[in-house]
Image (cartoon, rainbow, N blue to C red):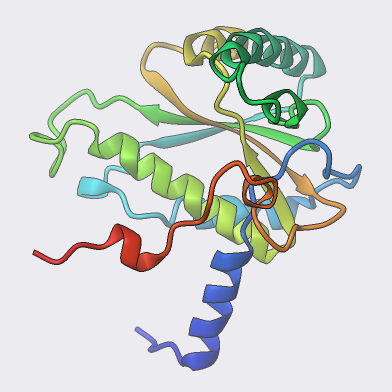
Amino acid sequence: MRAFDLHAQTLLQSIFSSRRDVRGNRFIDEPIEEEVLRKILEAAISAPSVGFSQPWKFIIVQDAAKREEIYNEFVSENAKASKKFKDNSLYPTLKLEGIKESPLNIAVLYQKPTKAVLGQTTQKKMGEYSVVCAIQNLWLMARAHNIGVGWVSILRPKKVKKILGIGDEYKLIGYLTMGYVSEFLDEPELLKLGWEEKKMVDEVVEWV
């Protein structure tokens, strides 16, 4: 197994710090080449999975009618969410999805086990966390190819599964929008807008 040098470490740090949650106002109408998409998905399934369970599945949503239904689900749920932020004038101005604007929508699923899984007998959700690791790998490899990704979380998983015809053996973990973008912001958008302040390492680390 190779040892990585300072150049590789610096490059990886640059990709980490340049990753952004991309909304629909920045996707452009340019298709993702099949070879590039395969590299991104291969990076995703290279993620660690507890017990080497590899419990992930990816559904690429191409059908315009299904995407329209999922968009309508977002609109409905976002209307409910906005009531929780009614005292924040910034919320109604935020673009929080790119379901119709992005070239690709990807539903990322967790396949529920049918037998005991190594390392998951006590902490039952470790398989789901493994799928989140796959999403992070996908996100970072996409950024390395100058492709943006957005995670649309204002959706009811059961509703999305019904629209896509997904069976009970799967759980929706993430609904992603992906495509080339007009620009990557120099800072996360919510940071630039003043929604939250960035936490530093010393604020989140405790030694015991």
